[in-house]
Amino acid sequence: MTLLTSILTVLCAVGSVKEPLKVVTTTAIVADITKHVAGEHANVQTLMGEGVDPHLYKPTAADAKVILGTDVIFYSGLMLEGRMADTFFKAARMGKVVYPVTELLDEAYLLEPEEFEGHWDPHVWNDVAAWSKAVDAVAEAFCEQDPDNCEAYKANATAYQKELTELDAYAQKVLSSIPKGKRVLVTAHDAFNYFGRAYDVEVVAVQGLSTESEAGIEDVNNLVDVLVDRNIDAVFIESSVSDRNIKALIEGAKAKGHTVRIGGTLFSDAMGASGTYEGTYIGMIDHNATIIAQSLGGSAPEKGLNGQLSFAHVEH
Image (cartoon, rainbow, N blue to C red):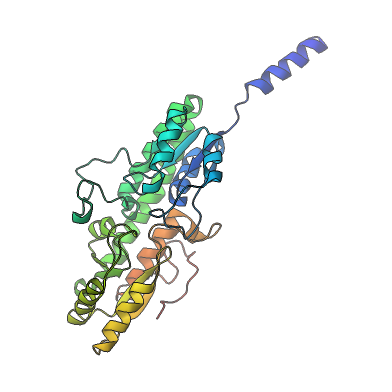
């Protein structure tokens, strides 16, 4: 082989190496499953950081620049990112590939709350078995865009779904340990309906499905009556939602002679801090299921399914 032939062979080999796909996601929850499926074949960037409320998020000029420079866009869908709809439409018109990860969910499964008549409840990730279908959607999308690595995407998806099956079984186990009469989850906004249905927990919220809806004095007073009448002694705040209404519940119950404590902080529309266990989807659900079980009289390991939760006690 001549020197020239050797050089040409090397150059051809270098030219044939595909760059990882450039992927942007809206929420960190979507990014987490996307990274698991993509492995080394994509670089994933997230628009919304920890503690960000996707219902209220308004895309910035910087976001638009990121989207224009990407290959694939994944978003949750079902109107979760309501204010970003125009951005997705514009990106699609410009030839960008845009996927909602909830597109494979059967409509018969989806919930349609009264206040959102004509629209679905978008908080599907709070049911682990349902969110596992989003993993399939991501894998299918990657296979369409990068068929050469399709088998790797499918293998990654299958491995991750095995972990999700274990997570779902854990949530079922610890939440079912809560005495039936105590299995009432009171939160700031109505993000846990799928969670309640999947794990047989009654869910009551101060605000509606979207944090854009405002809770009035009557809403708070009505829920205070529920706390007192049913002797509910723990309520939960959310990491991405103001705790103002929850504190009003506690004060209202106190005025009626009933003590209510904060059972803990739940991750509803956003995960924990990046780089932490709670900053992963599995850690997020592990945290929620564990702290709810512990706070409502059930039984759960002190530090959760994988022994990695950062808290070592129930908040009071």
